[in-house]
Length: 400
Image (cartoon, rainbow, N blue to C red; front, side):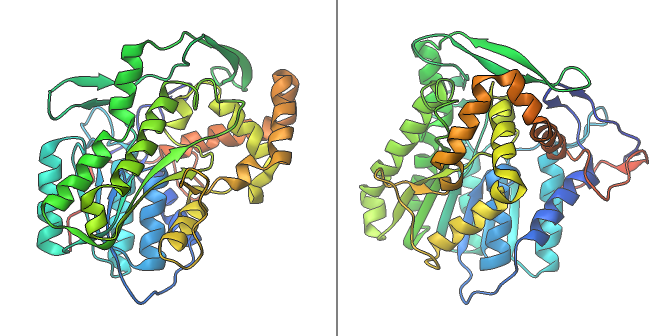
C-alpha cells in the first residue's frame, strides 16, 4: 500500500508524476463516450502501444463495439515510492477493470515491445489463449529503440532536414500561454537513420514475422500502423523532417508486407493509417505542434475536432467492413479529412501568419491544449477529488 498526497510536478509540457484516479477517469470517460454495440464475431487483436493515444482509443473502441479478444502491450513504470507509476500504468489498470466488468477477454503485458524477448513472451501468450491473430495494431511511440540484431541503441530526434527550422511556438512557462520562437538545427544523416530505426517500420515487420513464424496469422489477417501527415504549416519539422523520413519508411514497410509471401498466403493486408491531429504525450513534444493544434481546435470547435476515440471507431468500422475503406492514392487509410479540409487549413494559416494576434483569437484553444496535456497525466480531470491522499501503488492487471 502507498497511500499518499501527490501534487503535479510540471515544467512546461513535461509532467513527471501521474494521478491514478485522474488517469483512470479519462479512460472511463472515453469508454462511456463510445457507443456499446454487439457484433457477431469477436476478432483476436494484438495492440502494441495500448496505454496511450491512438493505441488506447483503438483498444477501447475495439472492446466496446467489436468485442475484441487478445493482448495489449505497453512499457510502463510502476510506482517507486519517489515517483508515482506512469499514467499509462494507471490507464491500463482502469481499462482492465472496465473490460472485466463487461466480460471481455483481454490480457495486458508490460514489456519493451522492441525486444526479442517481448515477441517471444507475447506470441507464447497468444498461442496459449487465443490462437491466430485477426488484427495487429502497431501504435508504438518511443524516444529510443535497441536493435535486437546488433544491440545498437538508436535515439530518435525531432529535426528538420536540409535547413534550420524557425517557427512560432506556445510557451507555458508563465501563468498564461504566450508566443515564443522555436529554432531547430537540421538533422544529420546519422540522426535521420537513427530516427528511422526507432520510428520506422523495422519493428512492425519483425512483429508480423514473429506471428507468422508461430503460425499465428489468421486468414485475412490485417495489420495497421498509425501515422500522421498533418498540415503544410508543420511540414518542415514533421513530414519533411526526420520524423517524416521515419513515416515514409513505415509506409514502405506496409507495401513490403503486402507483397510478402507470409501475407499473401493468408490473403492478408497491411496499411498505414493516417490519423488526424491529437494531443498526445508524443505530439506535445514536437515544437510548434502545440500552437498548430490550439489554432486547429479554435477553428473547428469542440464538435469539429475529432477525438482519438471517434477516429478509432471509424477505423474499426472500416477494418471490419461496416463502412468502405477510405484510401488515398498511396493506399493509406485516411482518418484526417476533417483536419485537412481547405477552409479549415486556410483559417489556420491566417492565424499562423500573425501568431501573437492569432493567439489572442485562440486563447481558449491554447488553454484547452494545456488542459489536455495535464489530463494525459491524470491532472485537472473533472469529478476527481484532488488534495486528498490516494493509493498510487496499483498492481499491473492480471487476468481474472
